Image (tube, rainbow, N blue to C red):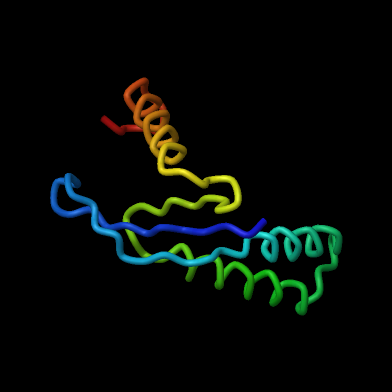
Length: 103
């Protein structure tokens, strides 16, 4: 479940986004650590809590502090047309009223 990210900030008005970084994201570690913690049931160990916290901290660092983060599987997103179609679908959904108060 290796993923890549592109982090962006929006300028005033959000018209011209600026790429502020990119990173690899290790989602698998978060999923695995979470499954281990859930399997602990009512008696989670501190070591398992710490492992999950470490994985989540790394995930948050990779996602970054931008206004927008696009996370994708680089083995499946191989052309520029693919993310463009994703962004188009997101925009259409937002215009249809999904995602809260987007306009």
